[in-house]
Image (cartoon, rainbow over all chains, first blue to last red; front, side, top):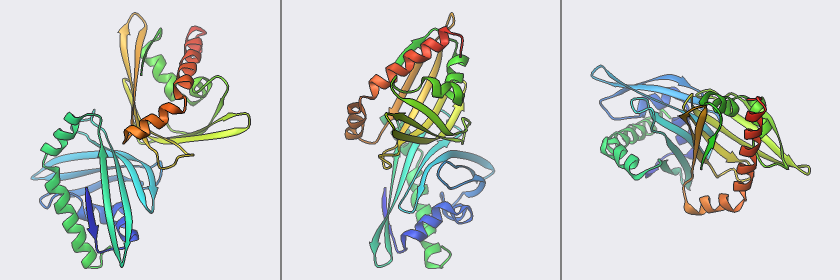
Length: 141
Length: 141
């Protein structure tokens, strides 16, 4: 997925590594996220829970690499503990205070990919990025 | 890659999670490995160095999942810091004190896969497993 933001790379990096900021924008509009564990450094790990109407969805992974231009992490929805994605986020400086965020989720089968897509994750991702854009406009990031 | 061992799943698991044991068998015969950092638990991380004729090769990653039947971890050769593999190891109990070790390395391109294969890693992997088999016979694992 690729999306351009009216923000500097450092701002997008902060929005993805600061747990308070991250919890404010990640996920769809009708879910609230609480960080359970967060060590956004190379070799660290993370876990958070998103809730909707009293139902909790837990996610966790480890941070393989946390660099200003790139984050590599693993990702598992604990409801499907055997499924693991390798996620890479690139922060590409476009100049003039704009940054291209490119993300890649690598899974080990096309079935796994299609199962992810069927969850409607795209809606949640886009709603999350819209929230992040609002935070950038508000100067919160 | 798939290989059957005359060992119980717990023995193979220990050989992959105990740093002293792991350093004894991993890699080709003409290299020696020293563990720099090792936390073989879910959310932990690892780093080691293998040396041949005074030249050091550093590797590192994080442990996404450490379970008796499966280990999921990331893997980077620090000489190519942008390359990341997602590795999964399954320990399948075949009964009668035998275990099938199945490993999968997931990278994000066929070029990346072919580059790995060209390094001659297969020789090192097979020599490493042969050492591990020797340790099993010797009762070291």
